[in-house]
Length: 439
Image 1: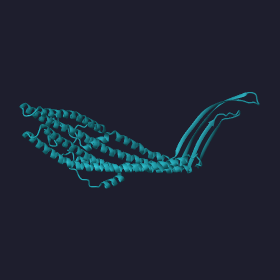
Image 2: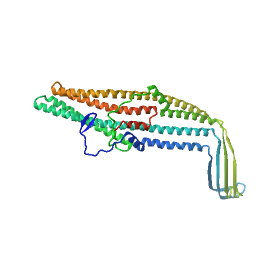
Image 3: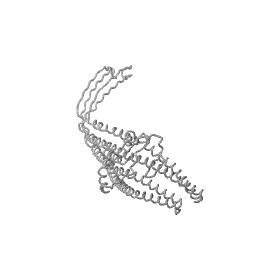
Image 4: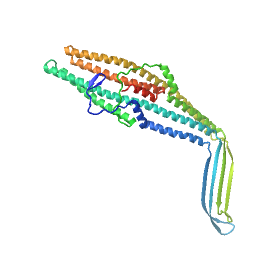
């Protein structure tokens, strides 16, 4: 026999028990398999290349070019009778190099590249935090689904006993058939609920498998003696912590900074640019269109400075500056939206955690009261002052209290991670703390 929250039910001992997997182990499996995190890792590695692309803007560029062509001419002279046909080829190759000396836009783009890499790093960290929360939610959803099945099995066993007793009392003439019908109806209802609970368990297990790549066989459960700790900090303190550490806010702050840098980059379009340029060409022709043309070979090398001063580009540069200013304003508006949403999420998480703590205490007392009520009702049924329906109702209330208490425990542990996620301070060490509450 196994015991769940004080209720005994039959367990299958024919199969050897496999070692249970705890929450931290599930998270480590998810780190190696989760597709969302893998996508974030790839995006982060791709973003690191932006730094090299930014540095390349101030490095020299060297190009090699070559061309070859063949010409055929047929010339008719008006003053002299007759015509001349000539065929000849031209060959040319060269190398040119350019080294930027002053390009304000390029300098700002290098700064933008550094900002974009910071954005990618924070996005990766945010994905890791989200995986912590998703792993915790999926883990406890599986446990809750398992508990529902175990509770239904225990409730079926209790109702079956009540059904057998009601049928025996009816056969002895001590009770009407109504009690047996009531017990049978409750038992049939449990069968329907069991089907639904098995479906919920399968869905929860496959959701966890999608993250970890492993179909969970046995998960470590929460200790029955779990005690909820009161919140040490106020809601205002958690909100202040969230405004400082929430990664969504930090990402949007960097986005606003990137928009500000874009303004400076577009304004630099009004500034002159200065490059050092060098080139070398070698060309050869074995003839020319001229009647008396001869072949020639020409080699040219040059080195110098090239100054470019933009005077007027049809207003495009000014338009891009105005567009960048508006984009910066939008980024600041989005930042305010995220700040307000973060504050709201933190408030919600704080209140949910506070409610979970209060519910745990209240449901623990309700469980004791429901057990006492069931004991008294069963005693009253034995002496004839209570009916079978009263016993069934008391049993239903007891099992509902057990289910609600188990659910409150899972919500309490999940809400701890949810609050820390909203505040931006969640870490793998928090899962290690929760593991101390598992067995």
